[in-house]
Length: 486
RNA sequence: GGCCCGUUGGUCAAGCGGCCUAAGACACCGCCCUUUCACGGCGGCUACAGGGGUUCGAAUCCCCUACGGGUCACCA
Image 1 (cartoon, rainbow, N blue to C red):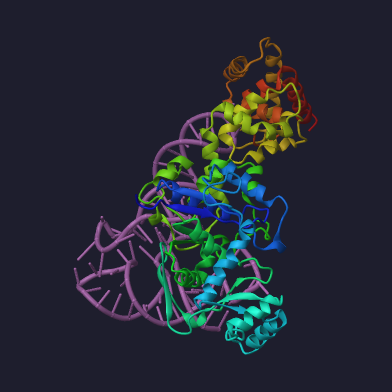
Image 2 (image 1 turned 90 degrees about the vertical axis):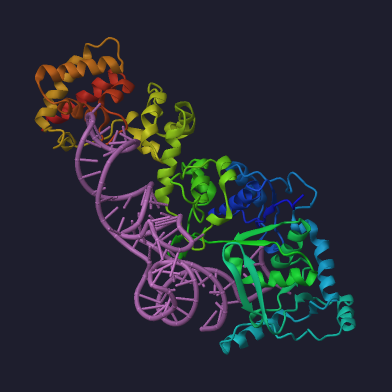
């Protein structure tokens, strides 16, 4: 059997699911699934200084929420565990030693101070920093003696002095760099833990990862990875570097700048499916089709590497809004009601209001759930408004006409026994017919009176129905008084 | 700054040498529907960064320039 495709999402637990990270996870998942492969979750917590309480839970939660299910991971196990790097600590040192054995790495005892000085002097000369290999020629015996004595040390990768290193990337093609720009990077830190770069290579190999998918900020460190694979004699995986997600042409999307995380988007009224769909389209295109609404299941079928783009994509909230609206309209009324309920409850506390009816009015008019309270608060309390609201050119209304219409409406509405949309409709329209005015000359004033707003979800009749007879008449009366006192 | 990558309308993008006087979507603007708003329908607006090649022919290939980004840690 051909080797199974295995991808991995390897976040470091920072307590925050960045949109870019989520997209990386999504693509990794999709690459695996579109090839009937496996998607693995591995936690990269080799930086102890950055440890954040509960951060791993955020990762689980976000992935679960997004519907991105891993086949192996710390929480569910698998044949290649453990899946947390800090729990694999012992293993990296042994691998680093193998590299020392074959001459691809060496011990280094340089102090932070020396390194800092070195860096400063390079900087002063305007040169790029490269470790000066001060420790490279320490003999193996001497080095091991120092280690045995307990001297702090790191292990560095020995880069070739001359020549070039090339690697293939599935989206960027073949890339070549001069070896002279490669720094003898640290593999094992003085705390004994591996650096990200080293742990990554070792774990990806051990976990038989076939496709290494990551953000394009890793593009320039990839030659070092290749050299590491070669030094071990391991098979080089397929590299897939993803273009960045930007907030503007010149700024990255970032937490520090206050850009929303996945959870932020969800809690501000975006639907999970819409967000997932949207980010799938940031940096990837399904190709020659006009379709752009896809479920995760559909994406699992159609995703392909060819659609990956090389250039950065700007996160466009407008398009997300639209897509979210599309998803909202696709919900059944009941599903929408469930989703809208918490937002409705924020604005509409009056028990007499049938929020289910409000919900029905809202579904076609809502793009982001969080806008619901501001659009429905008038059901609870009639806002203060100016009589100029009654004047609308296109509706052909003036304050005089409005006053007259409201007076007629009030009288006619009072006679309704069975208060429902149909009845209200009949009454109001017969009024229109009787007085020979335009529909709008009756309905605009009524809508204005019952809502106190220029824009509302639903029209006069729907709102009156929801408000109930008593409240409707009360509000119409308020309107009459406002207009009469002018 | 060195190295690496990128550049189709405001945004996401199709396009892989002739089908391109360049798709589709979002946004924006207009019209229609309509009791407001929305939904829906119809239409409009804007793009191959610039310059050189290669070729019968270039958005597509090559080079240069400009601009943007990434990266140069005992962070990931």
